[in-house]
Amino acid sequence: MTYTALYRKFRPLTFEEMVGQEVITKTLKNQIMAGRVGHAYLFSGGRGTGKTSSAKILARAVNCLNPREGEPCNECEICRGILDGSLTDVVEMDAASNNSVEDIRSIREEVNFLPTLAKYRVYIIDEVHMLSTGAFNALLKTLEEPPSHVKFILATTEPQKLPATILSRCQRFDFKRIPNNDIIKRLAIICEQSKIEITNEAMKLIAVLSEGAMRDAISILERCIQDGENQITEEKIRELVGIPKLTYIHSLTKAILGYQIEEAIQVVNQVIDEGKEINHFLWETIKYIKDLLLLKTGVDAVLYNEEEKKQMQSIITEVSKERLLKLIYALSELENDMKWSSQKNILFQVGIIKVCKQEKNEGLEEIEKRINKIENILKQGTSTKNIEQPKQEIPITKPEKSQKPVKKVDETPVQKMQDGNLVPYWQTIINQLKENGKVMLYTNLINSKARKLNDMVIGIEFTDGLTSFRKDSTRKTRKQTRINKIN
Image (cartoon, rainbow, N blue to C red; front, side):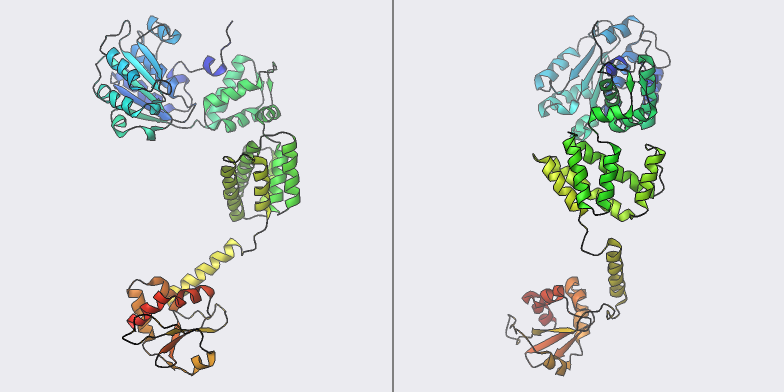
C-alpha cells in the first residue's frame, strides 16, 4: 500500500473543514449559493494557510452535481473525478516550473473548447508570481474576458510581485496566519484519528514552531512518529527539531542580563558541543526574551509551566523593559548577520560577548532626561547655566568690507575677551540667523555674548560653556562668513 503524507491525507475536502479562514470560506459559499461566482480569483497568503486547498474545494463546488449549501458533495461523478485527478476539466499548474509564454499560450488555446463533463473548466495556477513578464502579458486578455465556461484561480505567497493589471482583474482573498488555538484543535483531531498519543505541551510547541502554517504543523507531527513510536512529548519535539532545552535558554538570558560573559560563553559552548542548531537556539532565545517583555507588561506566558514562570518572574524583577527591548534588537541584528556568515558559531560567540558587555555610556532613561531638559531650555529661550561646563570663549575674525574671506586668528587670550566691549546688536544677529533658516548655527549661539576686541576681531563668549561640537561648528569659515554678512 502506498504511503500518503499526513498533510495530504488530512487535506480539507470541504469549506467547513478549513481551519482559521472562516471569513473567506463563508464568502465563497455565499457566492456559490447565490450563483455569483467570479471568473477569476486570487488567493494570497503565507505558506500552509489553505490557499491550494480552498482552490480545489472551490473547483469541485462550482462543478458539483449535488452541492449542499455551497459545499461539494465529494460523492458525485464530477467530485470523484476531480479528487482522483482523472477529470481533465480541472487543470492544476505550478507556475514555478511552467512559467514561460508557451505554457500560457497553451491555456489560451484550451479555453476555447467546452468542458468534457463538468460545467466549468477551472485553471488553478499555483505560485503565480513566478510567471515571466511575457507570460503575464499573454494571460491578461484571457483573464479579463474569459469564456463563460472558464474560471481562473490564482494562488501566491507574494502578491506584491504581481502586476497591477493582473490584480485588478481578480477577486482577491488574503489568507491570514492560522491562530495557534486552531492549529492545536486540528492536531488533536488528526492525532485521535491516527491513534497518536501526544501531550498538550507538545501540541502547543508544534503550533508555535509552525508559525501559523497548518501544513508545517502536520509535517512536524509526522516527523515525530517516523521512529515507529506513536507517543509524542515536548522533549521529543525539541530533540528532533534541534531546539536546546529551556534551561540553556534561561541560563543564557540570565547571564546576558547580568553581564556575566564567562557564564554566557559556557552555556553557548555546551549547546554547540551537543550539536544543536545554533540558529534555532538564537531564535528561541529571542522569543524567550520577548516573552519576558510581554510578561513584564502584564501578558500571561501561556506556553510555560508554573515552575518556568517563576524563573521568568525572578528575571523581570531585576531588569527594565528598555533593557529587554534593546536586547531583542541586538540579538535580532545578530541573527540577521549570521544568515550570511559561513562561520556561524564564531559570529554567535562574539555577538553574545558583545551584548554581555555592560555599556559605558549613560542609561537610556538618563539620556532621555537630559534631552528633554535641553529641549525645554531651548523652547523657553532661557539661560542654560544649569548645564555646568567650564566657561570658555572662542574668537572670530571680522574682515574689512572689501575683503571676502575671513581672516583667521588662531587664539585670543581670555583677558582681552573680558576687556572688550559688548556688542549691543548681537541678539539681533542671532535672531536673523534663525529667520534665514540657519537653525544649527542659531542653536549653538543661543545665550552667547559678543565682545568687540578691536576693529578687526569680535569674540564670542559662551556663558554656559564651550563644547567640542560648538567649537568645531563656530570655527568653520563658512559659518563665520554668514555671521559677518549679517553684521
